[in-house]
Image (cartoon, rainbow, N blue to C red; front, side, top):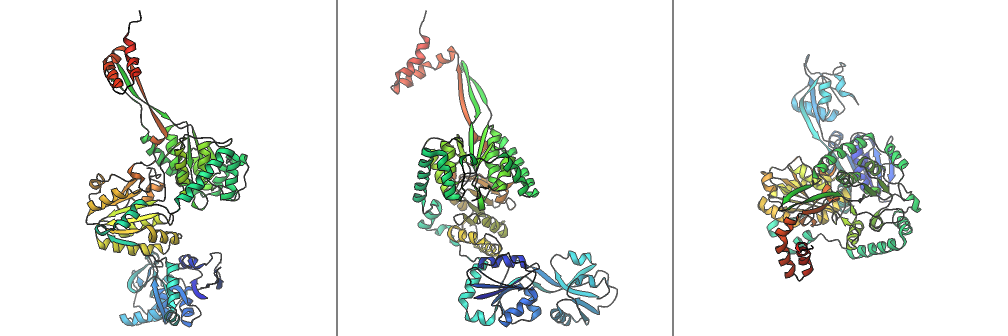
Length: 634
């Protein structure tokens, strides 16, 4: 069993416990005292201790590994192996004096006596060290000391106590340490702990000009491996729902979601929606309302308007007619997306659709995610059903005694939802937004891009699932190297880092282009769902983009802004579908109906053309229908 010491409290505790969770540590431990907790698989033991004691535990061999601060290792003068600095707990150990010194420095207060002694000796300051265990900054004002040596992250606490930084003893961050003997004799265990805790990965890297045909085909196709099995399951679901309607829906809810439901319980009640508001935070409700307002503002601009024009002897035009009904699918459970509810329902409402139903899965207790229900209410859904997966799409396509048939189905989902939407349109019963699959982002970057921002956006996409894709196409090796380093740094503290790690390893890429033109040429082939343009002259290059679901321009236009708050819709074509599909908009929820009114003179002006074309196609009755109107019926 491998023993790992982690801080039981303090600023290092939460992120250290997050890292340890990859090895099976449970956050159920309170950490008020020192605890020894084993992982469920029995491979790891976690020793919860004060951060300052951890170097001693590791040095003595009581723990094989530990997470603590570099400053604490240096203060303890512990003989341990510093394996890897960690991306949290960054601070400085500083020497600080009063803003207005009143005399010589004779006493220095600190909780780091060893490091302080070395620093004072190196700077020639002869002073007595006053050892304190807390509130070091207050010691000068209290008359206990003339200066201090203490940790500072921002300097605000120093300023609040009338102090200013006069020197830096050392810079520090959290660090993973190991017992020297253990690290030397157990290299495999060391690699294992590093890999699991830090989420190390290898991302595909290549110059775009040297991208092989096989690898390019893999990137461009984005095909899932089990499509045939998924499609067969979906066909069976549709056939069953066609025959047995509500009975089949309840059976599939029990089979896939573990919920035993009667047909009358499929619809979510108004009382449940009202109760959902008390189950989410006020901050989330405020955020949903603000997002809804922005989405509605954008959607209203998208609605096409009726128009009419005069023609010789008549007039013609288009009427804009809302669809009679729309079905919105929203994933639920652990992958609940209330934002997708807003993105699906609000444009339909802006277009004037009178009936907007929402289907979302429930848990095994028959409860839907409360955030999804609140979003449905804010967006304006008329009815909500606790149905998920392929059976939800089948219900909205075919209809049942409980669930109404709709004219169009929109919304994201897993492979089964995607296959079900394709099955629905193959039956000619509904239309859909697009056959959406796993999410993806492509970032085109030059030297003006900030590597930390690019990495953050790639991780935002990768955390969706192992099948998500995050690809960087940049104009220099230096940018690619910097982004890769940032990916590994930022990945460490992601709660969903194992998912993101698999995504980057399996579907991620860093490609080096000769220039922005070559990068955009590849992007047009790839047709990404999300395309970020972080380059000089970005709007000029935007005109060269032909195939993309949505484009995000500049360092401060993170893709998450489009996902949640700005207003443009985030339901976008994936898997290369952006070559032929657009993102969801209010236009998708209306039909354009042409109309034509001709006087006799108008038909007379067209009759010879009508007759000639009709005869050419062998449809003489068409020509005669025009000719008949000019015969004498006296």
